[in-house]
Length: 346
Image (cartoon, rainbow, N blue to C red; front, side):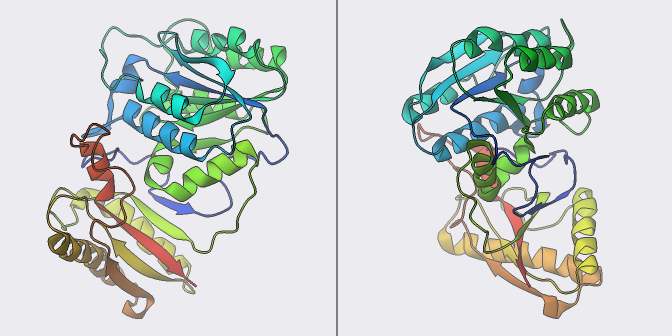
């Protein structure tokens, strides 16, 4: 669903997906009886990460993926929006299909201007929801952290913790790298409680393993040791029908090359991927060219050829859906699928 040709790179340009570290602490000792999705629908959430990717699209895709992996159904659940406050799934027994429909009903388009963000009031809107739940409740806050009206969201989160000590607020951050104040607010809420896990929405959008780990950590499902390590070149996505590497992505590839230089015992398989437009045969060749383009770049940066292999998967391994549920084209999903990944071979 989400990465366009002008996507801004959040955090580190190279995301290493491993068992350690999507958040500040494992939630293995904090297992919820209930969960609440709390989603920011303010104007800033309908701005772009990069053409054609909207923050709200990243948020919806992450929630849909999480919903598909939540273990069992023995939870009370809710889906709440703020800015403005709206309840899409009232507190009640968790039903995966019904929750999926509620997530899908979040609007894809809304006005941006003159829609300010009272994030503090949004967090306090949890009060009557949490009052209806007993036991431990995981709140999964999805926001860019922008707050420009009303009470301090950090203070309101602290008040929620004071009133409901059996709550843990996890965060899916969809903040642009330039949203420094938004990132500061989200990090401050994250640091209030060691149970809290904070992840980037773009990481969840691009990598299923990251979603699986987030769900394992939040919902206390058994952790399965991963069989492989994958380095995703976040931001290295290709224009439609193209395999050239544009100068704007040099910083990402340079960091990737430096990572390999710092780990001389690691070899990689460079995997190229496409969206579903075009024939299978054509997309196979295109994915191979994309993988080879990254290979050639790393050669120029001093990575030895015998440490790298290339392979193309065509359109066979999408990270996101190429079409919407109604069959229409999904340009955000297609953009995510035009990518390159590095599989580590020790």
